[in-house]
Image 1 (cartoon, rainbow, N blue to C red):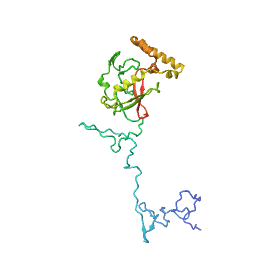
Image 2: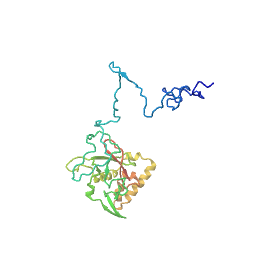
Image 3: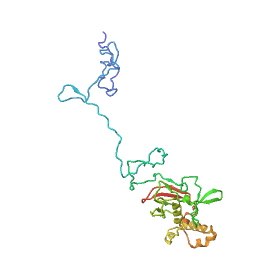
Image 4: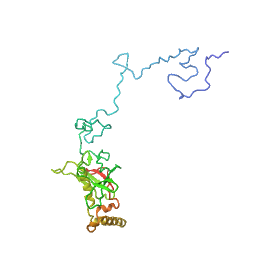
Length: 295
């Protein structure tokens, strides 16, 4: 007697979560709807036709017809057209704009945000230092001895050949854009920061110049120390500072007696690092643009 079943029984009962779908029951007696068999009670499924089952549909105002909600446009996930904050500084554009060939004024980096003097300025603020002051440059030809009793910044021409920096160069702006307040610190003497603040009068040029920076550095490190300053130095540092003091006044025989009589100065704390190498930008404090002095 032949089997009453057209399809043989499955060798095993499939797990309830194996390839589970509510539109295809797991039973050995009902063939899959997509099986192209002579004994299949259903026609072969077409790849171009799929069934549609309405979901989340509801009658509208008693209407028996199904009402399908229209698709809602997706809202923007980015903040477009957000007004800028007046407490933040404008960010520099990633691309440099074309220069004006007609001598017109440059537009600010962001016209929508007015400049706020209260916004925090970190070390990433972009400044261009004058080549004579740039400590990041390896091509600087400035020779400036901070231990010299006279202010004499010089330019190196060749081996053992120097020429004084001209007054025209000393009157050039120290930074671009120009500033009126800056602070200079040194790792060896952090207790004596050098503050430069421009006072407006009929003799000022409106910006800190290269000469202002070099003169203020030389004037500051040439100051005499106090007894309280010397009392805070340990024994080993006193020996190194005393050696620098002796070397300094011995290097100028014509002024050796005068220099020795004035005692230890701040520049002696730098020891052998008394040649100015430039400035590098660091974090700003107390409303001053800050640079670190390299010697």
